[in-house]
Image (tube, rainbow, N blue to C red; front, top):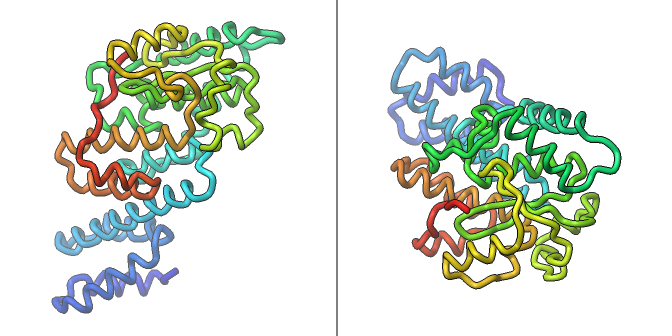
Length: 315
């Protein structure tokens, strides 16, 4: 890592009129990566020259972008099973200083509040009713119906803060907490909506359960107990409701619309929502970042096709 003196000298050279010198300085700072961000941000806050300040801001943004994309690329290539880790990386698309530790503390509070209400030999339905009470009544989580497509609805730390979100981010938080309570609750990748399923006898300790090879096993359907709609206060429903929803959309009843999807499916869907939201807001720099993030998690084919699917709907 460069010394404070070297950093000061490099920042001074950002005012150089020689384009070659400027490119060398920028590349030197970019090569330092995230390790230099705290020092670089401190210099940026104190910088009095607007031109240098803008250059520093651009370099900081480029470093942050690179860290997010490379982080997602690593997550994708090394197993793609830790949903929370990827959700926190997505939050940093808009909020680079998000604290992973603070997010985990808030999730642990939710888990503990529900765990304190649990007792021996509860049925799956009784456990969900308790978690619903803690999640929706005690903590006040709800669907954001007034600003449904806002980017903040897709950032886990903002949803934990505001208690409002879209179906998939609410589902992510609910599923993370449920699984930490040893409840086999997973996402279901319905078109135009996202819900949860409570499985019978799922092995949460077996990493193979979260592998993509396992995700479309038709035998899983035999172990579905019921479904949960986190966008509608944890409403519990059955297969027939999904049948009716698909009939309304005039879509076939494919296996993947009824059984657990994987963390990678959830992250990809959140990225699609963010792409739609930032495109609508004409935030070109964020659109480009989302596209890079999509490429990092194997969504190149979708980027080649400009016909993005409709945004999330309601069940």
